[in-house]
Length: 147
Image 1 (cartoon, rainbow, N blue to C red):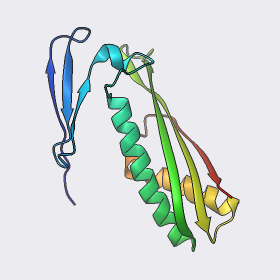
Image 2: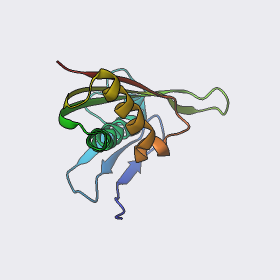
Image 3: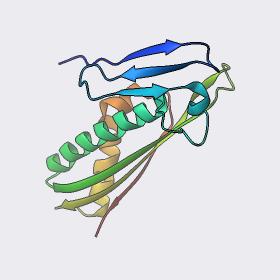
């Protein structure tokens, strides 16, 4: 299996510095990062590690869920997945930590009822490689079928 690469160039200290994250493998872009904007409610046009993790988690979960649905005999027509990744103080070790991830999925699926979709979503949450990598973070799931 392949290895994917991203690179960050950082200048300055934590509070006064800034950097650029480059998605090196895909070459789809370079994105600004800064700690003050990372810790602010309004990111002001910059990304953050948490947003990048949210992107990775929502994409991975969607892929995993589409597979689990098919294995359960259903047909996924559309899945809308949002991942909310929270940053907060690390009371035990100092500094900061990811304090939680909320996965929200709405799906249009043929062949599964609401309970079957919920079971598939729970299985995908457990089986998604990004979820596995984030086992130290509380991950909650809100899954529902769209009518």
